[in-house]
Image 1 (spheres, helix red, strand yellow):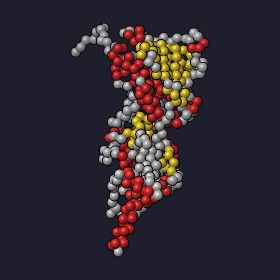
Image 2 (cartoon, one colour):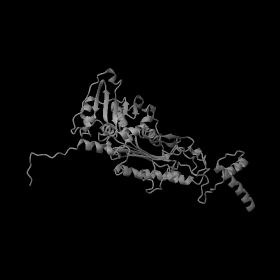
Image 3 (cartoon, helix red, strand yellow):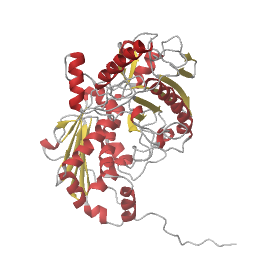
Image 4 (spheres, helix red, strand yellow):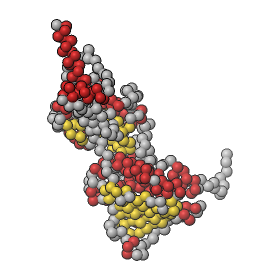
Length: 471
């Protein structure tokens, strides 16, 4: 039996340890994306539950050797929120600001972690409605042992007041490694690519993001859908699992056309950029990963490993919920929590859709000259939401109060190669370019006909001669 005393044992973390560990598990690019994510959250809160008109909002990011800054017009931080929540190291259980908002922030560390990752001096100037104020985070505060409250300062000059509600965060006294990264053009390109992928849905809806005075363009992740109710369409599945609305589509991407310019054996032109092939995973409109081709998204796990034959296949899955902690995403917001039940259940359907299109490419790979274009001539590239809406109207869709599912294989809407027989075999050979041009000129009166067409014509001539001799 123990006897209680008046003595106590300290259990609070030291500031140095907390700041060090907080920033260790996030890279610099992800820290910048965290701040941009906060801007979007501000626009969502400003809309108050209504649909956000992102074309009204901008974010300007500047990377320089001596400072970092990010500026937006997304509503700013209310003074009471700044006093009670925004600058705390973590989110209180009674902080319900986003309980009715589809965000992916869970722990209330994004802004602070990003600032601590970059430098030792920072100022957060914000305007909410007509109230403008500034919160400084100094090296002296970082070095102090205690967790003293941060001051809230009033602007003293007219030019310190922001022209419209929004926030400016500026970080100075950058760490040497951060300064070197900001001076590196390849790092700027890395950040630009990350923004174009991670925030593609918001950029497509009109959000203007400038990085070092140059606009960031979205990466389009889409699949082809025929406009005909009996034409080819992607696999579609939608269901609510554990309070999360899961939407899935798998189909052909727009990275290849239906012409075979380079003589490969898929019946599609080789992609100029296959970045969107594979799986793209969205959580509340944020792209957590884009174009994944690994076991993470099922490749090589009960289905073949990814290889170039599948470069025409794109899968898109979105998890949507107002309960951010239900989403299968980590605190960096760019990695998946693959142990979550909602992810594991969804993976079953992801593989089901993949098998359909793997089978499709297998059917066509021995038919390089087969013309698929007639079946796809009215197809348009659509994003996930538009795919769900379009396919949901088809007669072969399975639709209940809790689930939508469309299997194009079972609906028999996918084109099949003409003259497909079990005995068909692929004929492949290579000849020097000079010889290919000579034969092309002889057969077609042009010296640059496609290799597949030249080879096929040669075989047809030889076959005709063989039939005459045999007859």
